Image (cartoon, rainbow, N blue to C red):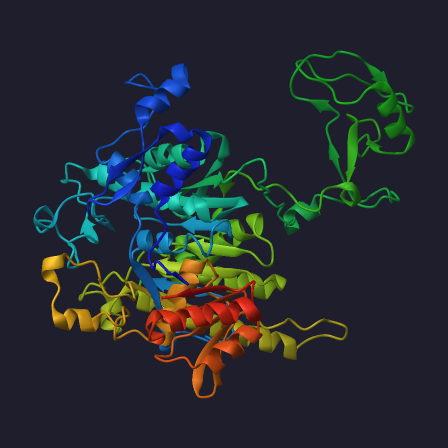
Length: 629
């Protein structure tokens, strides 16, 4: 039986394999840091094969910063970590399809590569803006532990999580770029072919993040840069200009497949349509007969004798035949007196079902910061989070990009506005969108309102916000259904739950010891490679990650002759982590013919026992993939 690796994919080796498929003769062997042989690329041979198409030297267009090469390597480096479930901190664990994941988002993005590859329709991130006061994620390639100790912030035993990126830091922009690059690189892999990412940013780093995103997604996939009006009042104490906006960079994974939905017309837009002449096609609004560029002085005479030619510098939109048909069908308006400048009637019945979004989002349409603070206040969370985004902004994005069953990811989730918006939008349009929130448990300042209210870190705030917002939305649906008018359909309940998962070290013991480090006790200890503090549920979610199964799948527990088995998604996977698995239980699992089955390696006393299990599955479930951990 194959043994599960219990580590993320080595993206570098996967890339080497792809190159090897095209150019087998460039593949060579090299030793890794442990002295073991691995595949590598002979770049000199590759250059020869590509001849004049290889860029070599400084004369090429490229965005560089201190630490870029290391950040590229970091994106591809595998990790031996896992996600551990915490049912007691979750809400509606058994039925929800939403996820809240605590931990460094770089680790999380690596861990999700198999389970959510090409699966996320929309990503929204609101990363640190690098203002000189905020924290940024401190990755291991930036500086060693001794260098790091001199910086304000927090660090773990590896000395590599957060530091306060002050303007006095000589690597102010480089550290920030190195933090963003691998995360965006990994995020792109999670997007569906028609997926879209929005990146919230301000003037401090908009130029740099645009260059980074251009490099990762491709300039051709830059859909637009949006200006969002985050404030409706100015600050007169500003030194130069009062900043009332942020930017939202919008990139497609593949612009050839991306679709931006139309927005429904608002009341003001609908009021522009009227029908004063009782036209059988219904309400209309007048639009010019000319376009704004070019020159066309051709005159046209309408049936009522009105002579018209386009203004200087413009041209006619329609030829004589079309003009005649419009005139005959009473689709030309000549003003209230019937002799004015002719205009075409544009009928609402013939128009598109909505309007295109613009690149400037007013606070009237997409919310504002004051509104965001009020949302927290209405949930009795006033003052516990700085600078939250309004849920209306996230709903506005989601309407443009997503359909009812799509997955939305936010890996800088902060106060969990995105989760709130997803639940609210589902309540409004009956959708079943799923959210994945990712947040590092940054500690709350002991002087902050959040800490005084009992919240030790940002994750505690985010989870509580989702709980309270979900309860509020659920009550609103119930109340609305009680007040339905005759013939109105009741709204269905929405998913207001979430599964909490936390990044932790691998479930497996470190078994890579030098020969001199082995002792008799250590050899005895290796009978089971699984850490003693890990539960069946911990092991199950580690298996889901490695096998590339979504972490929101339905999970049931059964017992066969007193042995517990875990059934995921109606026999997509059956797992049994008992210390001893009788043959009868193995046969019963095989009879169900699951797509996948997994056991503890230590459950079987000898190699012959493992061979027996393989033979049972070959006989009863030949198409089942069987592995051990």
